[in-house]
Image 1: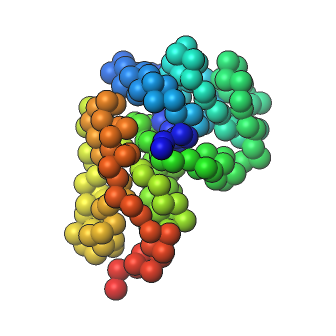
Image 2: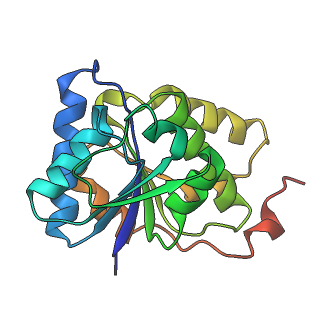
Length: 194
Protein backbone atom coordinates (compact mmCIF):
# COMPACT_ATOMS: atom_id res chain seq x y z
CA UNK A 1 0.00 0.00 0.00
CA UNK A 2 1.49 3.34 -1.07
CA UNK A 3 0.59 5.99 1.49
CA UNK A 4 3.41 8.53 1.56
CA UNK A 5 5.77 9.52 -1.26
CA UNK A 6 8.74 11.88 -1.32
CA UNK A 7 9.10 14.02 -4.45
CA UNK A 8 12.32 15.73 -5.51
CA UNK A 9 11.94 18.40 -8.20
CA UNK A 10 12.90 21.81 -9.56
CA UNK A 11 12.30 25.21 -8.00
CA UNK A 12 12.95 27.04 -11.29
CA UNK A 13 9.97 28.78 -12.86
CA UNK A 14 11.71 29.36 -16.21
CA UNK A 15 11.58 25.79 -17.47
CA UNK A 16 9.52 24.47 -20.37
CA UNK A 17 5.77 24.14 -19.78
CA UNK A 18 5.91 20.41 -20.57
CA UNK A 19 7.67 19.83 -17.24
CA UNK A 20 4.87 21.65 -15.41
CA UNK A 21 2.25 19.59 -17.28
CA UNK A 22 3.95 16.34 -16.25
CA UNK A 23 4.21 17.50 -12.62
CA UNK A 24 0.53 18.37 -12.56
CA UNK A 25 -0.49 15.02 -14.06
CA UNK A 26 1.64 13.21 -11.50
CA UNK A 27 0.12 15.18 -8.62
CA UNK A 28 -3.41 14.31 -9.79
CA UNK A 29 -2.42 10.61 -10.00
CA UNK A 30 -1.10 10.71 -6.43
CA UNK A 31 -4.20 12.43 -5.06
CA UNK A 32 -6.39 9.90 -6.92
CA UNK A 33 -4.46 7.10 -5.16
CA UNK A 34 -4.84 8.87 -1.78
CA UNK A 35 -1.07 9.35 -1.42
CA UNK A 36 0.41 11.98 0.89
CA UNK A 37 3.03 14.00 -0.96
CA UNK A 38 6.16 15.05 0.94
CA UNK A 39 8.27 17.65 -0.85
CA UNK A 40 10.73 20.49 -0.30
CA UNK A 41 8.15 23.07 0.80
CA UNK A 42 8.76 25.62 -1.95
CA UNK A 43 6.23 27.74 -3.82
CA UNK A 44 8.04 28.13 -7.15
CA UNK A 45 8.78 25.87 -10.10
CA UNK A 46 7.73 22.24 -10.14
CA UNK A 47 7.63 22.26 -6.34
CA UNK A 48 4.95 24.94 -6.41
CA UNK A 49 2.98 23.20 -9.15
CA UNK A 50 3.00 19.88 -7.28
CA UNK A 51 1.76 21.53 -4.07
CA UNK A 52 -0.82 23.71 -5.85
CA UNK A 53 -2.26 20.71 -7.70
CA UNK A 54 -2.42 18.45 -4.64
CA UNK A 55 -4.17 21.20 -2.67
CA UNK A 56 -6.57 22.00 -5.53
CA UNK A 57 -7.63 18.35 -5.77
CA UNK A 58 -8.10 17.93 -2.01
CA UNK A 59 -4.99 15.86 -1.33
CA UNK A 60 -2.48 16.06 1.49
CA UNK A 61 0.91 17.71 1.00
CA UNK A 62 3.69 18.06 3.56
CA UNK A 63 6.54 20.53 3.09
CA UNK A 64 10.03 20.27 4.60
CA UNK A 65 12.11 23.42 4.35
CA UNK A 66 15.26 24.76 6.04
CA UNK A 67 14.85 27.87 8.17
CA UNK A 68 17.13 29.99 5.99
CA UNK A 69 14.78 29.44 3.04
CA UNK A 70 11.80 30.70 5.04
CA UNK A 71 13.76 33.86 5.79
CA UNK A 72 13.74 34.69 2.07
CA UNK A 73 10.10 33.55 1.86
CA UNK A 74 10.59 30.56 -0.45
CA UNK A 75 8.04 28.43 1.43
CA UNK A 76 4.58 27.72 0.04
CA UNK A 77 2.06 29.74 2.06
CA UNK A 78 -0.90 27.46 1.28
CA UNK A 79 0.71 24.23 2.49
CA UNK A 80 -0.79 23.67 5.94
CA UNK A 81 1.82 21.18 7.17
CA UNK A 82 5.28 22.70 6.87
CA UNK A 83 8.21 21.37 8.86
CA UNK A 84 10.95 23.98 9.29
CA UNK A 85 14.31 22.29 9.86
CA UNK A 86 17.75 23.59 10.71
CA UNK A 87 19.65 22.81 7.51
CA UNK A 88 19.73 20.94 4.20
CA UNK A 89 21.02 17.72 5.80
CA UNK A 90 18.10 17.56 8.22
CA UNK A 91 15.71 18.38 5.36
CA UNK A 92 16.90 15.44 3.25
CA UNK A 93 16.62 13.07 6.20
CA UNK A 94 13.11 14.25 7.09
CA UNK A 95 11.92 14.10 3.47
CA UNK A 96 12.61 10.33 3.41
CA UNK A 97 11.18 9.52 6.86
CA UNK A 98 8.32 7.05 6.65
CA UNK A 99 7.99 7.26 2.87
CA UNK A 100 6.94 4.35 0.71
CA UNK A 101 8.82 5.59 -2.37
CA UNK A 102 10.83 8.43 -3.91
CA UNK A 103 9.95 10.10 -7.20
CA UNK A 104 12.50 12.36 -8.89
CA UNK A 105 11.17 14.85 -11.42
CA UNK A 106 13.52 17.01 -13.48
CA UNK A 107 15.51 19.52 -11.46
CA UNK A 108 18.89 21.11 -10.96
CA UNK A 109 21.80 20.44 -8.64
CA UNK A 110 19.65 20.14 -5.51
CA UNK A 111 17.43 17.53 -7.14
CA UNK A 112 20.46 15.63 -8.45
CA UNK A 113 21.99 15.61 -4.99
CA UNK A 114 18.80 14.37 -3.33
CA UNK A 115 18.27 11.66 -5.93
CA UNK A 116 21.85 10.42 -5.81
CA UNK A 117 21.84 10.43 -2.02
CA UNK A 118 18.67 8.31 -2.02
CA UNK A 119 20.34 5.89 -4.46
CA UNK A 120 23.46 5.77 -2.25
CA UNK A 121 21.36 5.13 0.87
CA UNK A 122 19.55 2.34 -0.96
CA UNK A 123 22.84 0.81 -2.06
CA UNK A 124 23.83 0.63 1.61
CA UNK A 125 20.45 -0.75 2.72
CA UNK A 126 19.63 2.41 4.69
CA UNK A 127 16.65 3.19 2.45
CA UNK A 128 14.94 0.21 0.81
CA UNK A 129 11.87 1.69 -0.86
CA UNK A 130 11.35 2.18 -4.64
CA UNK A 131 13.04 5.09 -6.42
CA UNK A 132 11.30 6.20 -9.62
CA UNK A 133 12.80 8.71 -12.01
CA UNK A 134 10.25 10.56 -14.15
CA UNK A 135 12.26 11.16 -17.29
CA UNK A 136 10.11 13.85 -18.93
CA UNK A 137 11.49 14.87 -22.35
CA UNK A 138 14.45 12.51 -21.81
CA UNK A 139 15.79 14.96 -19.22
CA UNK A 140 17.59 12.30 -17.20
CA UNK A 141 19.15 10.46 -20.18
CA UNK A 142 22.68 11.80 -19.45
CA UNK A 143 22.43 10.76 -15.79
CA UNK A 144 21.15 7.32 -16.77
CA UNK A 145 24.11 6.96 -19.14
CA UNK A 146 26.48 7.94 -16.33
CA UNK A 147 24.94 5.34 -14.01
CA UNK A 148 25.17 2.72 -16.76
CA UNK A 149 28.82 3.65 -17.30
CA UNK A 150 29.49 3.19 -13.59
CA UNK A 151 28.03 -0.33 -13.85
CA UNK A 152 29.91 -1.17 -17.07
CA UNK A 153 33.18 -0.06 -15.50
CA UNK A 154 32.52 -1.92 -12.22
CA UNK A 155 32.03 1.08 -9.94
CA UNK A 156 28.64 -0.48 -9.24
CA UNK A 157 27.38 -4.03 -9.73
CA UNK A 158 24.76 -5.22 -12.22
CA UNK A 159 22.32 -5.79 -9.37
CA UNK A 160 22.53 -2.10 -8.44
CA UNK A 161 20.57 -1.28 -11.60
CA UNK A 162 17.52 -2.58 -9.70
CA UNK A 163 17.72 0.34 -7.26
CA UNK A 164 15.83 2.69 -9.57
CA UNK A 165 13.16 2.60 -12.26
CA UNK A 166 12.89 5.11 -15.10
CA UNK A 167 9.55 6.05 -16.68
CA UNK A 168 8.67 8.67 -19.28
CA UNK A 169 5.05 9.35 -18.38
CA UNK A 170 3.39 10.38 -15.09
CA UNK A 171 0.71 7.73 -15.66
CA UNK A 172 3.38 5.02 -15.32
CA UNK A 173 4.76 6.12 -11.94
CA UNK A 174 2.36 4.25 -9.62
CA UNK A 175 2.77 1.01 -11.58
CA UNK A 176 6.57 1.46 -11.48
CA UNK A 177 6.45 1.82 -7.70
CA UNK A 178 4.21 -1.22 -7.29
CA UNK A 179 6.37 -3.40 -9.56
CA UNK A 180 9.77 -2.31 -8.20
CA UNK A 181 11.87 -5.26 -7.04
CA UNK A 182 12.19 -5.79 -3.30
CA UNK A 183 15.42 -4.36 -1.88
CA UNK A 184 17.22 -5.86 1.08
CA UNK A 185 18.04 -3.96 4.26
CA UNK A 186 21.17 -6.14 4.16
CA UNK A 187 22.24 -4.49 0.87
CA UNK A 188 25.48 -3.36 2.50
CA UNK A 189 26.61 -6.99 2.15
CA UNK A 190 26.71 -6.55 -1.63
CA UNK A 191 27.27 -2.77 -1.83
CA UNK A 192 30.96 -3.05 -2.64
CA UNK A 193 32.09 -4.39 -6.00
CA UNK A 194 34.69 -7.07 -5.27
